[in-house]
Length: 97
Length: 217
Image (cartoon, rainbow over all chains, first blue to last red; front, side, top):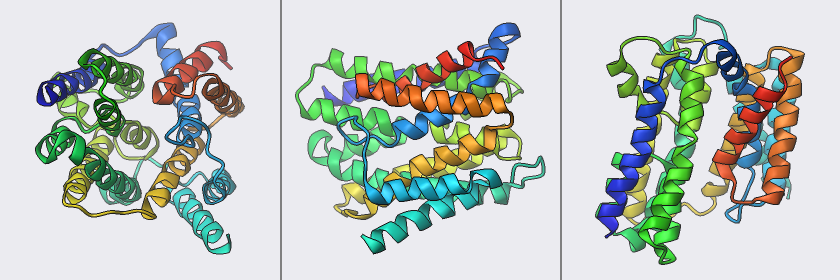
């Protein structure tokens, strides 16, 4: 049963990816909507990635410190700097607490 | 890094921490899935599926004795988010269908984010970051199946994802309208999670689509 389920799940997962990149490029009004999606998408994913295994938001001090460190670097608009600051915030909070 | 001159080495450098975090979760997945799916099926799933969200969901549901329909239904709900993700990156990836299909297996939240924000051509970024993430995921799974435990580092890896998405939000924000959309989407996601804790990444996509449709400035 498990192997059959995994095969079907693989078909669904990979099929959705193939479909997503096979579709024609969105144009007109839909294209404008699609162009506006990345910013709210990443902001919403940032919030969702703060949830624990029960799906609820996690208020873990090192995690909060990591996000605070990352947010401090937002004006610099550098991904590597943001990652480094986030890790530094996490490390500092872990050491202090 | 956001200029149009980013090299593949810069793409690899930016992708490496993300791939490392994905590898750590691969270890966690391998260790968790082995007693439920068996070692072969655990590795098989990572090699063919490459979807942490779907694979963790399968392990949880199979472990709880859920029906096949319930498992496949949950996987389908998670897979739906690939459609808007693909639509976003599709406008930036041209070329023949075979190339897009070859890249499709690397379509994840993280690779799309990197493809949209790093300066290199998006298809190259998806390929480099995708190969790194996929390799890390499969190797991590093998290590987890082998019996290695990474308790402690798991929390650190978990902290990388919100940090990554904060960075990606910053990189894609260019106008005051973008700032407003990011804040509204974040608040919307908080509200959605409060109402429906299992909304997950699909909920984030739904919030983003609503915000993109509703706030045009």
